[in-house]
Image 1 (cartoon, one colour):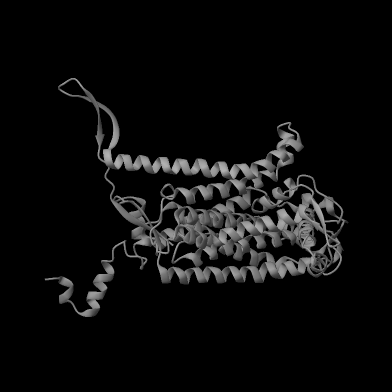
Image 2 (cartoon, helix red, strand yellow; image 1 turned 90 degrees about the horizontal axis):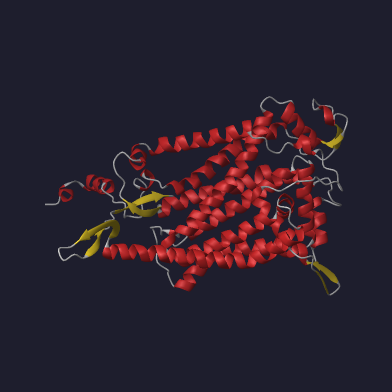
Amino acid sequence: MDERKTLPLRARDGLVKRMRTPAQPRGSWRSRSADHWSFLFGEIAVYAFVVLLVTGAFLTVFFEPSMKEVTYDGSYGPLRGVQVSEAYRSTLDLSFEVRGGLLMRQVHHWAALVFIAAITLQLLRMFFTGAYRRPRGLNWLIWIGLLVLGMAAGVTGTILPDDMLSGGSLGLVQGVTQSIPLVGTDLTGLVFGGEFPGDDIIPRSYWLHILALPGATIGLFALRGRLISRHGHTRFRTPAPRLGTFQTARMAAPRATSVAMFLATCGVLTLLGTFVQINAIWQFGPYKPGDITAGAVPGWYMGFLDGAIRIMPGWELDVAGHPLTLAVLVPALIVPGAFFTVLAAYPALERRLTGDHNVHHYLDRPRDAATRTGVGAAGITFYGLLWAAAANDQIAYNFHLSLFAVTWFFRIAVFLGPVLAFVVTQRICLFLTNREKHEAEHGRETGRILMSAEGGFSEIHEPVRRELTAIGSD
């Protein structure tokens, strides 16, 4: 007789809940107990965002979001007596006058870079494993939204100190806004509150940076949590873990390992903020319209935009008496707009092309989806080439090459490179899957040769035995 049938209803339900197998999609006891290393990117993004909130709250107390000009009389000698904005002076005071201010500034900056990097890696993991398939398509869009919000927060945060790097970002915003057909000039005046750079851009960026963007980010994280509780966690089919491994320890104390990961993230960011200098605004000086800073580069997450602008030919058209600056419009608006649109629509495109409308709770290995992996490699190559093109002048200078030749190389490579990456990656994936099928049928080659009684030679093959279980994640 079945033991569960003899128990009361509540006890029987509790036993069934405890006996739930990893193959069941809902429930988190098993999925949280054994995390694949690639699933930690999402956790790192959350923990880096927490660091951003804490350090940002500290910086907000001392920062003055005003473009009113004052005379600097602080402790940094080379700038004493120079006319600067209140935003720049308050940032200098944060760095040199406030106890722990420079550490908080640098930790905040590093946390922003790590936050965007973790989101990017999380999206790559979801793409290559097919984690965006039904019923988790909205989760895919949430991570894309988090990436866009993180990039917007990074740009607005760069503008706030009103140093020379801030001026470079403002110039880019002005150029991109003015390139929009028909409404570009009026929109620029609306954004800057008058003539560039105006007096309102830093206060507006400030409230956008500390309220609107963090609020939207918190909302997306909350929605992601609800979706996880509704749909459960995705899982890898991997060889069953042995006792004593990391997975077993994770089963024993899932919360303890999460706390350890949070403390490790905080520790790494603190070490970076302590020993690796970043955004030293006193070396750049205050922003003055018309001045430029040699060697100024954007944050790594905006490098693709800078590279696209650098390699775009200086085309300009006249449409019905209105100038159309393609040299800025195409690389700064059309290319990134098309890239993120395709990225967001890819799950729907894949369902339409493959006809796969099934619900998926298990993840694919990248090699098992050769076409998807090839598409991902092509996208990475396209992004990477644009990112590298942002350093075309440095490449030409350090390798003693012609800047003209380097620029044309990138112009050609952004078209041919993704195609080559797709073909090579797809072939590699197909080779690996075919080899596994061969090993499953004939066994794995051991390299040991056996001579038969008749004098013939043959290689010994050992059978391939795979016991699969589910390794879960959210």
